[in-house]
Image (cartoon, rainbow, N blue to C red; front, side, top):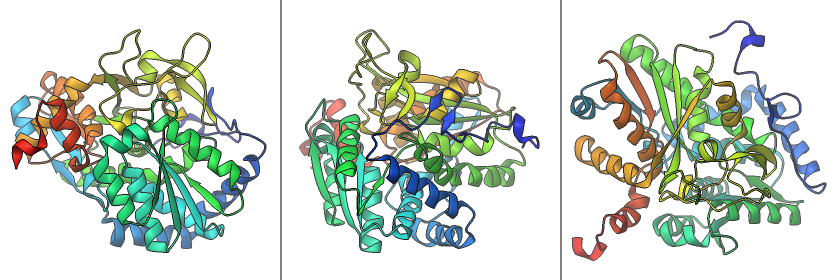
Length: 410
């Protein structure tokens, strides 16, 4: 790690919540006191040993951390190149990385005396994690979810309802993650006294991008320790899928100052990065603008209107990206690529067949890029990808995409 903080990639954001030209706090006057209150509470928590002791206890005994670092032997042998490891965060309680961050935010909410928790969700994993932790602590939970995502993520909708959450389908726009986040922000403005907004990704107004990153960085911290134990050194390449980018930022952040480690984020290429915007690759096919309280790369038209993205993966179906990713892209510390739906589906099937792991469609995008580059790399090259979610939530979507009716398997 770099000793000179002035030369470190890990010092952001600045006092204004900026990562270079990105980030910030673009919110209404009504929300500003809530944002400042949250920032003050988190600033206190960061140096409070009792806060981290509670987090560590829950991560271990409730979430099941540390998650394993798994050598994908058959996949490595099949591809004939780099050695492939998977960080198995899909084995967390609730089946994804989302609970790492939710625990932190809801502990903060309890410290602030907030009894009502609201959240947005796309694939449903953040909603499930929020509903789960609210159930544990006896808090009211309201989850905003795009109507389109409610339909394609039915298993997670039912899980949230079993956990006691109120699900509010959002019909505005295309009924996906962007629209759910819009309505959640409107709710927060309306219910300022007792409500805490638990954001699921490294986006939104400051301090959310840095706060969510800090909670998710448990992923990368564990990988450093586990990789040293397994290989005696750090990985050569890190790969993770990106919607807003929390699982990726969690893996990448503890390695930012290790310049010998290549970092690759994988965006949702949908039907292909094209002029029709049938994708969600905001870094590949977008440009800077402001959405949901921060400045970042967005899919937008010439007038600055936000365009509807497209992806088979509900969790990656967002027309923007976290501001720290935008900064890492612009300064060249990380590389960002896109993977199409077709490529992600092929990787999904390959992982099932060779490793006995059913991945979510989100990390299937990261795995698809692994399948592309691993054969081109030497056998002593080590790749670590984040298997950030399990695929039981996606089986209906995958079956439909592959031309099957679920009744055919009865």
